[in-house]
Amino acid sequence: MAQSDPLCAGNRVPETATGALILASGDVIWGRGFGAEGHAVGEVCFNTSMTGYQEVMTDPSYAGQIVTFTFPHIGNVGVNEEDVEADTPHALGCIVREDVTAPSNFRSVGRFDEWLKDNGRIGLAGIDTRALTRRIREQGAPNAVIAHNAQGRFDIDALVAAARGWSGLEGLDLAKDVTREETDGWNGGPWQLGVGYGQGVGEGPHVVAIDYGTKKNILRRLVNAGARVTVVPATASYDEIMALKPDGVFLSNGPGDPAATGSYAIPVIRQLLDAQMPIFGICLGHQLLGLAAGAKTAKMFQGHRGANHPVKRLSDGRVEITAMNHGFAVDADSLPEGVKATHVSLFDGTLCGLELTGRRAFGVQYHPEASPGPMDSDYLFQSFVRGLA
Image (cartoon, rainbow, N blue to C red; front, side):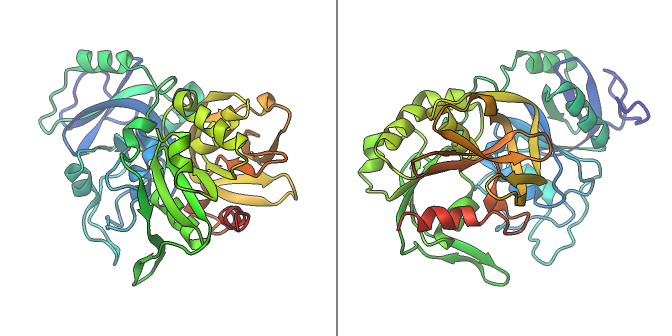
């Protein structure tokens, strides 16, 4: 792969290399390390978004993953304290084409490479990201180690063994690693230029959000729709949730295999369904709702990650431009009686939305809060909260 790139030189360390991506296959892709030094093992995926790299790196759904950015100029607008979806990055590292440059943006308060270093995350530059993306598309998302050493010293045999020894995401519950530990009230509102994020708890129906790895902007959109939001850990029991007297329950996004997280999440969701509790799920929450209703999920070959995914709404044929980040999906052929498909991907036909007929419970695979449309999918928050009144 990328044989014209002088940094790709087999297992021999090129003189200019201070970073490497070591695949479980034994292939080594050399580059220039930045950010934190060290190494991390995970699944290599790619994201096609042209903006939002800071949001991507802090999205808890990327736990256990190394993100290849297909857009070449990552880091050029620096970093700030507002464009984050969690307090710390959850992606293990990132792979980029060009070296990180000095930021050019009036909102920037620092450099992307320094931010990665401060947060213990590894970057790898000088990579033919198009060739790596083609490899993932053709061969699937590989397990690998991303490594950075300023002196260019790497124990390749040990790093290959680490990549081969990692279990992979299938069968792995990561929601417990990224969820909050305690129940909290949420009081953040939407962002405005020159003002920042508003404050407010919402004065409408009470929504209890189960945090499997939720993005902050999801909670903000619920507040913007009028909800009063309380957030509980992923392992909260049915009794703990009901003690908060919710009008509706939100199932958040998150990382890992939904079937693994479902070992403790599905019984709770089924109890909520039996109690006729209105439910709205996004991404992992959508998958868990599907599992609780009797459907099946499966690992995708390469996954969907980007901000330009067209999704068709089956009720009226409307197409929404959506943001996605998922490596598992609900199998449309496994939907049982009483569960219907509501949205499908126009890229590959995969299921992107479902609804339980006769119940106020629905979910979507994509991320309406990311607003790539920009507001194509905001109606989901509005209809969920209004339906609770």
